[in-house]
Length: 387
Ligand SMILES: Cc1cc2nc3c(=O)[nH]c(=O)nc-3n(C[C@H](O)[C@H](O)[C@H](O)COP(=O)(O)OP(=O)(O)OC[C@H]3O[C@@H](n4cnc5c(N)ncnc54)[C@H](O)[C@@H]3O)c2cc1C
Image 1 (cartoon, rainbow, N blue to C red):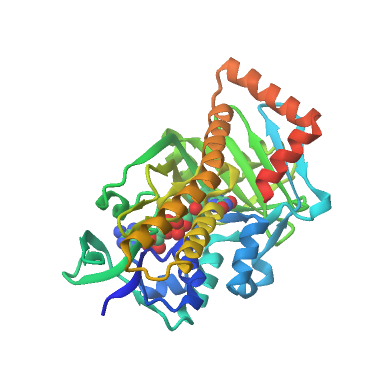
Image 2: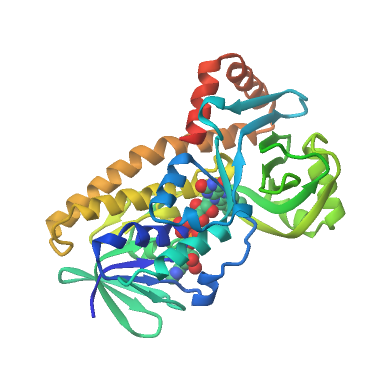
């Protein structure tokens, strides 16, 4: 039977999109190459996701936030930025609004979103399924699946990661920026409590972020180094990795020990040339894949899912080509306006804070000095981090 919407990718953005459409009654096919058990009980992947207030609101609206356990949510009260070898740190917080945001493990977000979607009668999961081709077919789009089967839907939504195969199959190009760096992430226990403060240390040659978790002595360490050093950092013994984290954090957290496994991610940012093609839309990382330094990737992914769902809810019929074209064009416009300044701003921050030549070092100091001494600029940055 044909579907109204086929979603390719049951990651956090794909699941959230299905949940946003729960009340509309569309017949949704949700495809993922992973087995259903892995979607239902996602393994820890080391990512701790900083969520803005808007994202928390969206997750609450679909009943996902309420399913998180208390020990999976930590408040982010303030953020400190340390530059080079300077002991000075720049602080961002907004006491009037409460926490800057909240930090939740990616695996927990995936689990609760899966729980929500698995209660929806209008969603059919097709796990262990890969799409190998797509063609226009009448008033919809046909998907060729790897087992030789075919599926038809009025709209295909690609949410299959920043390296999206579907995006490529649909002939949509993307600007990709390979930073030549990897992020190695792992949990650490610190002697000093983190006080719900995130610490971003832009050293020379490497950066370290310490993100506070629900346990007052537990943080997620995100070490960013040139890709050529990635294997070396992954291969460090626990005590050597802990010493690296202690040193790079300026010894503020006291003694450090490792907890659990480390994971490594290549840092590649992606911005699709278009967010839609005929009867196809891109959302999540498939549309905009961010460098994690400003913690906006999933927040933008959730916003894209929400924006597209709102446009579709206004369509009288998904099969009407003109109506669909208008809805997709409007989605693209809104999501571009929301994401492009953040995408470009993040890439500039990364460029500046990973360039160790002396003009960049001077500019880094100047930027932090200005931000530190002018409250309106600090407030604007805080707003960008938290809205
Ligand atoms: C180290 C790190 C830290 C981060 N920190 C933050 C943060 O603090 N805040 C924030 O907002 N974001 C953060 N992010 C970004 C966030 O993790 C991503 O934006 C988010 O996971 C993207 O979700 P998605 O559903 O679009 O894609 P993905 O999570 O990549 O999911 C894609 C899904 O599609 C499936 N799939 C892929 N290809 C196919 C195919 N061909 N056929 C079928 N299925 C397929 C996969 O199995 C997967 O289930 C971070 C990322 C990293 C790496």
